[in-house]
Each structure stands twice: as structure tokens, then as C-alpha cells.
Amino acid sequence: MTNHNLYSLFEARFPADKSQTAFEGPDIATYSFQEITDGAARIAGLLTAAGAVPGDRVAVQVGKTVEAVILYLACLKAGLVYLPLNTAYKSAEIEYFITDSEPAVVVCDPASFEEISAVATKAGVRKVFTLDTDGKGSLIEESRGLPTNIETVARAGDDLAAILYTSGTTGRSKGAMLTHDNLASNARTLHKYWHFEEGDVLLHALPIFHVHGLFVALHCAFLSGAKVIYLKKFDPAEVLANLPRATVFMGVPTFYVRLLSDPGFTKETCRNMRLFTAGSAPLLEETFNAFRERTGHVILERYGMTEAGMITSNPYDGERKAGTVGFPLDNEVRITGEDGAVLKDGEIGILEIKGPNVFKGYWRMPEKTAAEFRADGYFITGDMCQKGEDGYYRIVGRSKDLIISGGYNVYPKEIESFIDEMPGVEESAVVGRPHPDFGEAVVAFVVPDGTAEVSAADVTGYIKEKLANFKVPKQVYIVDALPRNTMGKVQKNQLRDRAVADG
Image 1 (tube, one colour):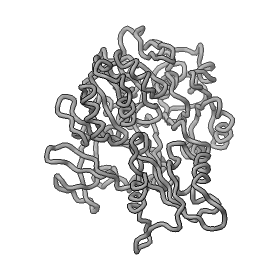
Image 2 (cartoon, one colour):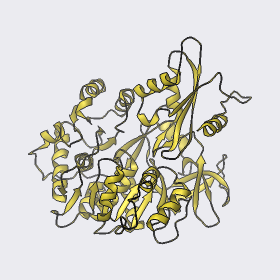
Image 3 (cartoon, helix red, strand yellow):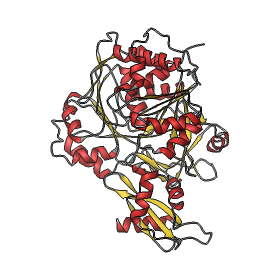
């Protein structure tokens, strides 16, 4: 069969002179392309020796290091399915992901090895390796000295390359299954649409456990054989120090808000830059305009989701409009009403998409998968969208209760389920309100049942123990009752209005 392995596509685009720098940064060792490919081969061999066979999952919860990127490439090379997990996830969340995905191998930080090993053993995981924030651990130690001449496993285009879990509106996360062709299609499209070429230098400050940092940013760099200036986290001072050596920067709106608050962020700082992109959350028009005035650059806003990668983008050469996400990329799009009928331009409805970038379905959730696709193959995104007279698309809201805080998806139902378990709590409702830095802040309304004292601090403390920090409410209201309509449904719009008024 024709080999559709994504790793082979990347390797073919790496420079002929593999001694060229692939990764460098202020807190990391410099890596050449030769060291990247050799490292990927060794780790691929180690994972195979541990008993992982093509199609098996490798669950990964580690800090941002170049070694973690090499691990991702190793999984592709060995025909394994890469399953990245947010580093902020706590034990209850990790247990669900490992139990649900049944990985052959888990890679975690040494600090959580004991806890994760206990969960992994119960789930039948063959081996748990460690990788710390300095790029050290048993994964690297045990792969040292292994052969580098192993073959890349042939994959069909429809074979899985990755599974990314998305928060579930019912509290149960869904594993979006992405194939080699899904990821290759989107990578090629973005590489061409955003004019990536040899000589580009990507300044990378995003996390690598989700689509934006892992697939959008790194895949574009890999297809260009471009050098990556790799920051372990977003730090405005580090970004400012490295921008003059870069040509491309990808960020979430929070990054741009923080850069603009630094007087050292100037046109001179951006003198070599050709492209700034924004995504993962809506970019405020105020930020868009302030950025253009300060730097002379116009941020290119685009729109995507875990299930499809990038779906639309403002043009590279044409006008980039504030408040819009541009035009469709390598997928067909349509806007429909609640009955599924296609709406006229200008009407607001649910965006549906179809194309080579659209995922295969949800891991072990055939009924959920079937419910999210139309009979003609269109995927129902759940995002409310409008196509303007100018042809530009605008995301105007969400049909689901999704909150996007700091670029991360937060589903209220998940947080509500934990709050409702608290002693002394009768029920709760979680909403988002606008936040100047994070885009949206999580706000909780809690009704006590009278059996125990419940304070706002109690709720915050309880959730901090259970869930990732970005899901912890920034504000908690203790209320006598939740507003409801005649059908008994909680009126979250009223709660949002109160949160906004008080915020």
C-alpha cells in the first residue's frame, strides 16, 4: 500500500543537510534535524520493544520539552496513536482518560509516576516511562544507544495518528480520532495558505498538548524544514527577546494582550516578522486595532477545533478583518438552522463542515459520532456562525455552553458535576463572563442544601483539588436558588448577566 505515514511526509521536507538547527531556545539544548530523526528512531524502537504495536495508543502527560516533540514523532514513526494530555489534569481526569483509551504505554512526569502507575496497572498498560521538564527520564535513558536505522511503519491514510480528548458537555470527555490523512491535509493547506517557506523561523510559545501548539504550529515548521525557537512557556520578556530573530509567531488572544501591555513591544521588535496568527479564542477588535497601531502588523485570525484542525482563515495577502475568521480552507462549509436546513448568507446558524481534515469520529462512541454527523457526511460543529455580505465568516457564539478561558475549552457540566458532589450543596450552575486577559472567566453559582456550611472559598478549594486550574471558578456566588423558566430549565443567560454586571 502507499505509505501515508505523517512522519514520512515531515522527514521528506527536512533539510538535506540535517546538521541544520531544528530547535533552539533560552532554556533548552540546541537540536539539529539529525538529532531529531535519530531520537525519534530510538524512542520508536523503545516503544516497540515495550510491546506497543501499530494502532496502539501512547498516552502522554509531560511538560513542554523538545524531547516531548521527539516522542510525538516517534509515535508516528512506529505507527502508534499519540494521545497528549493537558499537564494541568488531575488524577480523577487522568484515570478516566487512561481507562477509556487503554493505552499500551504511558509517559508521565516522574513526580506523578507512582500515582499514574497505579491507574495504568489497573488499565492493563504494558509500560510507564517518565520524562521530566528538563527532557530527562526513563524514556530517554532507556532509548539511549538503541539503533537509529529502523524503518518507518507504513500507514494507510485512514489509520489513526492521534486521539485528542475534548471536554464533554455531559461531563464525559470525548476522544477525537485524527487520521494521518486528516493531519497531513490540514498541514499542507496551512503551509501553503500562510506562505511558509525555507528560511522561516517559528517562535513557539504555545503548549503542545492540543491542536494549536502541536499540529498547527509545529506541522507548518516541519513541512518547511524551519527552525523553531522553542519557549517552555509564554513569557512576554522571552518573546520580546526572541522576536527579532523570528518570522512567524502563533498565539492565543491572551498572548497579544500581554505583549501590548509591555512598552518594549514595538515595530522595531517585530522588524523581521512576516506573520502573527491568533486562535483558540475570539480576538477582541480592540486588541486587533491596538496591535496594528503599535506594530504595523495585522494579526491573522483563524478558526478551528480539535475535530478538524483549522477550518477557516483570514487571507494572507488580502484584507484581514477584525471580528472575522476569514474564509473556508480545505473543507466545505455551510450554515444551517436547527432543522438542518441550509440558511441564506447573512443568517446566523450552526456551522457544519465536510472535508479531508474532518476527524474520523469519537473513540468508542459510535452513537455520539453518528449524532454529530449529518447523513451526507457534514460534521455539526455546534458553533454559531454568520457569513457576511463580504464573504467573511464570523463566529458569533456557541450553541453549547462552552467557555473558552485562556484558549482552553471548559464545559460547565463537568465543573457542575463536581460542585454538586460537595457536602452541603444542593445544585450549581457554571457560566462564563468576559475577562480582559483570559477571554472568559469561569463563574459558579451554588445553592446550599442547608446541611452544612458552604462558602465561596470552600467551593474554589474543592475544585482546585479535583480539576485543572483553568477550570477553577474565578468567582463563586452562594445563592438561595437558580433562576428557571416554566419548563424548569436554568436560565443561564440571567446568571451571565449578573456575572457581567458584577464583574
